[in-house]
Length: 244
Length: 317
Image 1 (cartoon, rainbow over the protein chains, first blue to last red):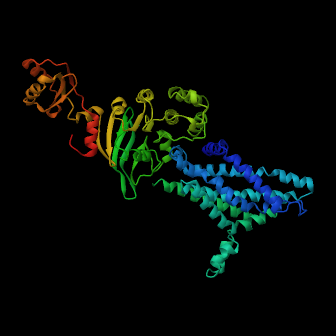
Image 2 (cartoon, each protein chain N blue to C red):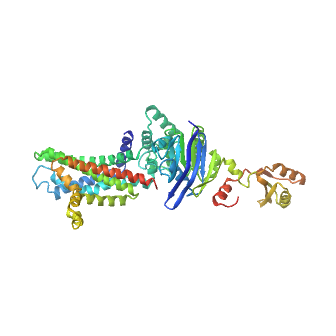
Image 3 (cartoon, each protein chain N blue to C red):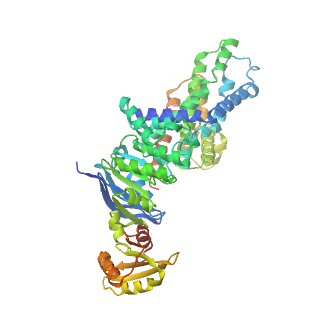
């Protein structure tokens, strides 16, 4: 536990040690704002809610979260610090969890910085704050899901570019797995239960359910177990690399 | 607990078809400074990476202070201070923040933490760059940050991969004195391709090439394998050099002679002894009997670079 805390602190500080964190935060906030107001017609809808904000979030996270995750392991391999890091008296599990939590905390900070939107709708009208809260919970959970995928892919390669592209691709598949883009590929030959299983992996379906204000245990379990699975895969990848 | 701090048993590492480390076994006791010598790609770093738990052995194991690296890698890592090749450190952190992070992970607390931080900062001479980001530091300072990190928790076992690489002669001397001052209480393994370093700080040297241990002994023993060991070199006027050579060559305890012409009408004549025996008395007698006047006379210790070359390339010494 103590080790996780030290690594977590170092990793989180690592984001803010370079301009990367600030560039990311500015771009995230600018894009989130642009989608909400221009594409989502925040004012024209005339409703005091954040549906137009949350609706675009999966698409934004799809490439912004892999950008946060890509450095987690790739950079250590590239600079050789991985050899220092993995010869400290820590377990691989601690290393994987601490790095993931740091990156997730960074994403949570970014999401928290959109709080002025929440304040705005409270000034303009009287929203159902329970629904907005659920939306934020869903948003943070979904960010965790994307982050776990990104962290795992980052452990595979020493190239941050490859880590980013591959992770964004996998995140995309998870996002749209309930839509015809993915299902169409299987529809002709796979049996219905398989199609239902694939569709159930859709981030969109689970996120939309939560952001409508229904915090269902199944949706929480989905994101929770997805994160756990990818972190286990991450640990396995790191351990396999030991064999050279 | 015995004095044996590191025990390596039949360590093997394959990278695909390449047999990088081939059945290496040895042990290191407290108080020993073992120097790994070998050409690049000989398997020195790979062996170190397996001892420190960064790479998993293909077969065999390393036992450090009673802990098997395959069974309990975290316990092994806690006992070792390791300077990886190239002294990697997080470039965005300042030296102070980096050492602070390492101190945390190494479980140093309170007064002990301050004491150890002060100790390494003083002995590795880091005070002046403590608050600079590591990527702005010179190669020498980066190496010292790496060294400070390895020494921070006062480990029983130190594994240093090319600790003086990239340092200037003064810095090299400082690092060697530092290693020397810690040698008594610890087991230290260093890798180097500087032969002078082995003579300067190692109590034992091991020559590794193509993944195998080819020689293991004190630096003196290795020097003893050189044909230069106990050879006698004489410098005298070039006119009589050939006459001296002929006189020396006739002695039955001398197996070979060499003449090398030098500047100012001087020449060096070297006599190589049979079986590395001391021949200084015999040579002295010849000089007296035949009335040679020499400018200089010395007994060679043996040339480690020659031993190294002959062992690692497989040629005759």
